Image: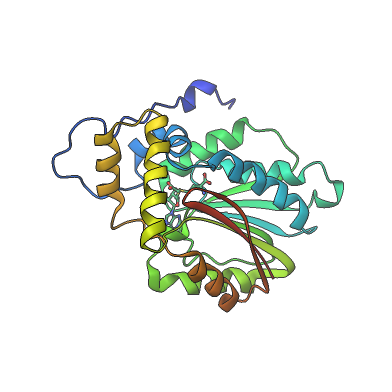
Length: 253
Ligand code: GEK
């Protein structure tokens, strides 16, 4: 069946516009999936660059016949960026891109975007928990703005499984919200809120989203990330990008 663009109409994010009184914890449900492209673009500084460069990085580190994983793929923006990062290289046409997310609402919409996309590289979308899904023969894995939602005590195990599944010379792209020491934290938080205000969010929306996400998204420092990536089995880690309090690392096995 041909997919129509109208199947995937997106809304402007107004989830926290009205006063919620008691704000419920944030969840990746149908309402969030429907506004997700607008929400992430207006909330995560540097999101568009991170997606686009994930495709560029995939083009450099992909290996023939291997899997490229997008863990916590949401609507598949990075899945498709990685697909197009490799599809012009004939040596990489045997690669497979696998997008995994445990939100059915997200994956359903991701399926529409993949169906509308045109490329000779296979894409599989899997609804599963990235903490248990078996990974193998990976050359590039993207974990973009997802580790921050995984319980702290499961993060090393996940990164170790990714490193073990990664072929020598393969890479992990890890993008996260960071936390900082006290002085820098205030400055970075102010800049992040300025960014959200500049994108049309009101102070009420910013405050309610913050309350909803407080116990769900747990950021860590840059040092904690770099140390754990090395402990997990990656030999070289660089910060290739930062925009305010959002960062992206490239970890090579
Ligand atoms: C992007 N990477 O567009 N297993 C599978 N999926 C999970 C799990 C889990 N245990 N925990 C959370 N998720 C995307 C953006 S969004 C980031 C990623 C954000 C999924 C969750 O369902 C959601 O789709 C995604 O991780 C996080 O570059 O909204 O800030």
